[in-house]
Image (tube, rainbow, N blue to C red; front, side, top):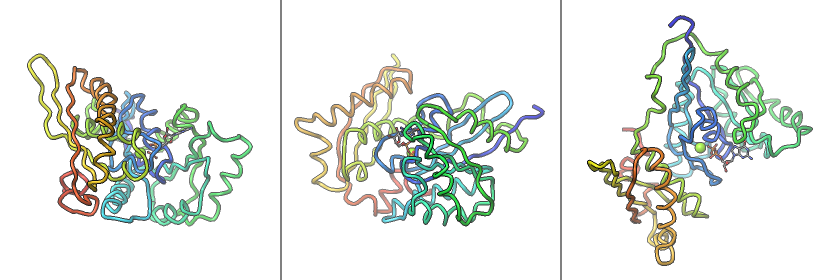
Amino acid sequence: MTNHKSGYVALIGRPNAGKSTLLNTILGTKLVAVSPRPQTTRNRIFGIFDREDVQIVFQDTPGLLDPKDPMHEFMVREAERALADSDIAVWLIDAIKGCTNRERVIVDHTLAAVIVPLFAAFNKIDKVNPDQLPRLQKGLEGLKLPSPPTIFYISALQGDGVPALLEQIIARLPAGPKFYPSDQLSDRTQRFFVEEIIREKAFLLLREEIPYSLAVQVEEMKESESGLFSIRAALHVERDSQKGIVVGHRGAVIKQIGIDARREIETLLNAKVFLDLWVKVSEHWRKREGHLREFGYLEK
Ligand code: GDP
Ligand code: MG
């Protein structure tokens, strides 16, 4: 089609800035996992926005952080890979916190090499007094960037400012064809999203270091002739002491994770689902190459 535009857009920023929330809002559907816990997103995930005149491959990414273990190192590589593949980079900043020193050290370091157009979007403005906006903008002064970023103020959660951001992204995209069929929403499989849904529901119920230590793996996914999906998934924890917490008193916690996850998986698959969850100890998986690869947290 003539005048058709397309390109890759990286959504990057500190953990919890709202990158995944923004992707879901732009797509108008719950695609990627969101939670108040930091480091909910662990992989680069494509979310494909398609319109007659444009296709944008948004890349959701793990938050930029100072890596403390091999799992973190993978997460940072995923974010850097997204940046390297992008036509535009959208840097999300939590407007409640502003451009903090940690943000300056880590993001400034990563963004200094970015040559594509950079949009800086202050997110969560629904929680910020409008008279604070000039102060936020001032916080971006003095950063070592190839060119000054274009600034936006948005609420990824409520949608304010998102259409304007989207239109500016489209305005800066090059002419090009669709990369994916119009009805394709992501590069990831159903199985991947089943795992992400279970992990998200667990993140919402568990606290402290448990979410951090949790990995979910679908071990079996079968569709019967009547259209019922039978799914068995393991929740891997790092230490024996964490197992009981995830199971809960008389199995109450894992049962609740199952109830919450099943509801959403049924929407995803548009089918009835039988979900069987169990907890397994995979000692220190965040540091073990074999486990990381098995869980999809290492490049193939
Ligand atoms: P990510 O780590 O950058 O992907 O952040 P998430 O999208 O997972 O969001 C982290 C937390 O911030 C979640 O609890 C979201 O509901 C919340 N959040 C995201 N965007 C907004 C927003 O615009 N306003 C408010 N109030 N909360 C938001
Ligand atoms: Mg995320």
